[in-house]
Amino acid sequence: VIQQLRSPLRNLRGPKGTSWLYGNLKDIFKSENSVLHEQWIKEYGNTLRYKGFFNSNRLFTMDTRALNHVLTHSLDYQKPEQVRYNLSRVLGEGVLFVEGAQHRQQRHIMNPAFGPVQIRALTDIFYDKAEKLRDIWYTEVTAAEEGKRKRIDVLSWLGRMTLDVIGLAGFNYNFDALNANEKPNELNQAFTTMFQAGQQMDILRFLQSRFSLLRYIPTEHGKKIDIAQKTMNRIGRQLLRESKEAVIASQGGDKGGLIEKSSMKGRDLLSLLVKANMATDIPDSQRISDEDVLAQVPTFLVAGHETTSTATTWALFALTQAPEVQTKLRDEIYSVSSDRPSMDELTALPYLDSVVKETLRLHAPVPNTVRIAMKDDILPLDKPFIDKYGNQQDVIKVSKGDSIFIPILAINRSKALWGEDAMEFKPERWEATPETIKSIPGVWGHLLSFLGGPRACIGYRFSLVEMKVLLFVLVRAFEFELAVPASDIGKKATIVQRPIVISEPEKKNQLPLFITPCQRP
Ligand code: HEM
Image 1 (tube, rainbow, N blue to C red):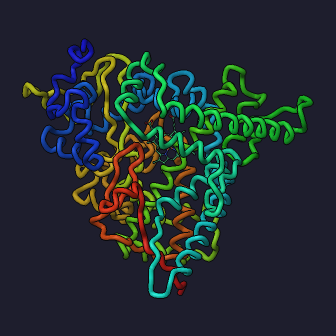
Image 2: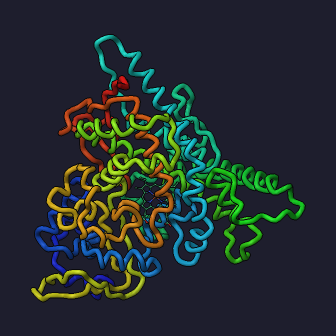
Image 3: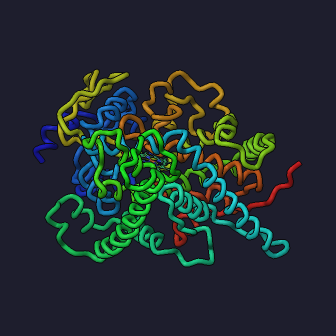
């Protein structure tokens, strides 16, 4: 209460809360991502406040200078305590969870594993799994009865593909999720339990995330997470042990052979991380503990699996809605003679690049995130705003504890930044982009999709190459058509925004497509 009374955000204009407990959050949750925020911008301008839990004030600004300040000062703007609690239940203290010096230390050790050279070495894994998916789809659609077309839920298949990829590329573990006849293996089951539990919200969980004393109350949901966590931990330790043994063996056994940080040759991310952490040419103070290394296994799974499969699903959706784009992309792909171009050849394809950028712009898989101010601060602005007293303000004042919404999707599709056609899927826009987007503080492509600053997505290169391989292999082999009317496709607003068929709510997330093998000219 005191924090709310002293917060300068109370002087900003914005909508009234519609619930004493949820403020405007339920309305936001009920509507499609960003839609309500975009209405508020029209009503109150670029900088406003809306109501969060217990009607607290939350800052919402589209000002790219202010957002840049928040993202680049990651020590002063951290993840909210309740988000961190929920993350830690599922992930342990991985890089997605930790803050401050521990985060800097983990990122420092992990960054090299995500460099272009390391991702190049993973490209074969992407191709192996993309081709396996292509062959499965081919068998499914050609086995359909004469005259009947088989609907394929591309979202779930792409999810299996990216799970297999992150298993192998992340820590040399074979989920074999693309093997439809096999029961999901132990780690897959544990991960699914955790992920589903992580997405559910009830009143007790909500209160537990806010009030630490309540965390001692045992719940069914908590028990499930505990069991899944034990499985993940056991398998994680085994993978870590294997990685360490492999590193030692590759350096000529444990007879004092020196491990150079620059000699990273193992392919999977965990091995690279283990190698970098065991390197003899880094000071001990830079090393991270085994527990911290272990926490990266579920972190990679959660952060790197659904995000990429969702992005590729939206790319296929967009292609079904723009047949001319699909044809143009296929023509470009056909111009490549090899079925497996190298990572460099793939990244040099301009239209494929534009399609991927445009998908990540308009269908950002993570549509927003939130930060908390750790101290009183002043955010610089590009453009002044008018407060609720009608006065012009040239900066935004925030106080310690204030919550700040980071509008990834709203920035990605802002008409002020991208032009009047910002809501349309147009890969051609990337041939000549407006100057205004240069102010967007994103780590890649002037987009906020992977965020920016020290907490930007570490896996963006991994994801881009994986998406490009998938689109190359799939669009080369098939034509895609939506199996339901486009107006029946909606977006479900959770952490990752996935498609739903509005008329089939019981099926949860899905994207049903008709897939036709194409005849190469
Ligand atoms: C299209 C795919 C992806 C998207 C859109 C995406 C998006 C994001 C975003 C928005 C964040 C910042 C979240 C926040 O701080 O609130 C993030 C962080 C992160 N991502 Fe990704 N991501 C993708 C793929 C991946 C992949 C493939 C990996 C790993 C293999 C990965 C690993 C991570 C990690 C470890 C972090 C935490 C970084 C830190 O806090 O230092 N991501 N990602």
